[in-house]
Image 1 (cartoon, helix red, strand yellow):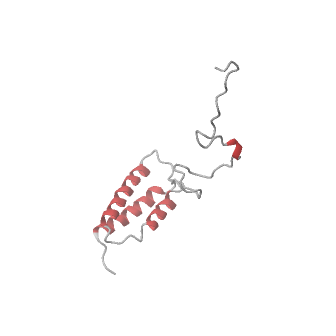
Image 2 (cartoon, one colour):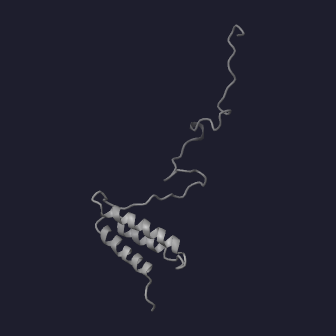
Image 3 (cartoon, one colour):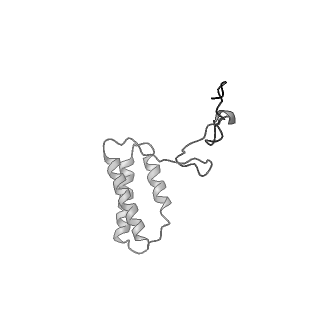
Length: 118
């Protein structure tokens, strides 16, 4: 087995530090493992991306070590209709007639003419 490069040693060290810092904080260890597994297939030649992720991990480590962090979570987009930016979670079912007008013209009515014609 070949020796690890400096960057590989730094990443492995970061992994261990994140796991240690996440002990006792709900979701932290699982999140750390999931993040590292997700990026494990990055090619060794993609140094810029690896360094970016390393710096991001260092910032997360600082946050975890601070006394204010009680856990570690992730924002997850649940399966829903595509093209609706900012929607997180499940949609509530709303009856069609309760939605209101879909466009400005749809809800517009002709102005009523007063009885005197004015």
